[in-house]
Length: 158
Image 1 (cartoon, rainbow, N blue to C red):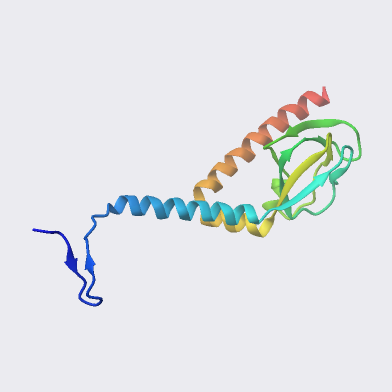
Image 2: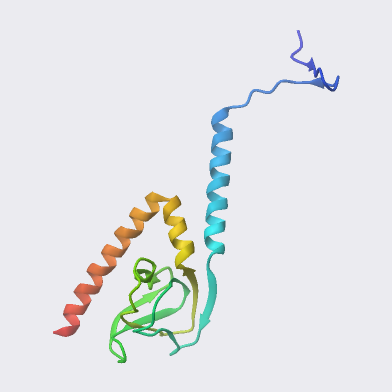
């Protein structure tokens, strides 16, 4: 007995195929995740700064955060050369502006030639609303950053 059948509408022979629904689910979940990540990354604006160039001035109103693609930046006490913290590839800065309407609290200056991606507040908040696990992860990251900055700040004052 053959597994081949005739399609009633077209009259063409067909061969039934068993499809594992988990494979389909995995495929579409992976596709959705990649598409979501693509859309998230497309929300970024790509910027380049030369050594010594200011990226953020303390006192400015912030409406975006930045991810360092390459290079190093210095977080400085406002209006001084005194470095609070250096950041490099993969680090994020300016993220508190995504949650608050306060002004920037420090200057950020390119220590080397820097390539960064700027993420607008609206795109970031939309991403967190759709990904609560990422929101928790991000809050943990901010907590760790504040802890590190507090420790560095107290050492700098001594």
